Length: 245
Image (cartoon, rainbow, N blue to C red; front, top):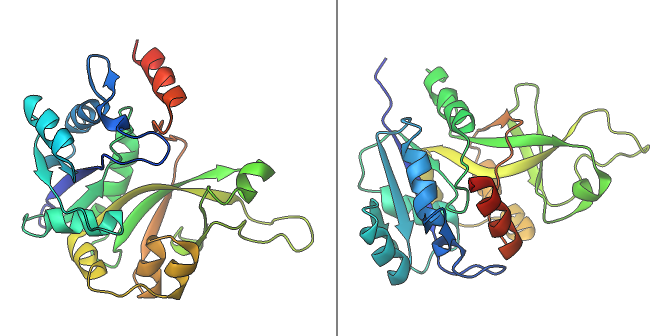
């Protein structure tokens, strides 16, 4: 069996609704996105790690820190589109999307994502992603938390902002799972995504992963206990600085 070539791409947009320029804030003497890059490189799981940004400020800053960075377009509607542009001319088999605002990236989660494809000798799985069990009703019903339902082999059946499944008699007979937006893709599935038009489910829920399901692709979910620590607010940044110390 040929060894799969694996790369990690860290999307780094300058704009952020809740915390603009969060990726260039200082964490332990370096910008957040630099610490994320270094942590990803330190896992030794990838043949190459690169950052994809749409902004000159981030690009120049990362160059100063000797980060492997490329400029991507401003026009992308989704993370898949941005990553696809960057990897289009890179020779690789598997692409892992690492969030730029997660400097405490979990090596075990990344290993689990890669393992899916190394075990998939017939190449039937197109994407892999993460989920964790949730029990709090407020979290389950919050539309900002994306839920996923899976089959017996943990393949995704559907993603929704709604509470799925709906407990008709007040009791669910399966766990509720929240999706973590970290993906590993086969490169060809990622490139195919950019050729497909958005369909109704994606347009309704505003969830790009539904496009893959609508076009018949397979998403393997992995149940994890390691929930990433993202930096979405100034309060998150302060907590991250305390943890870093």
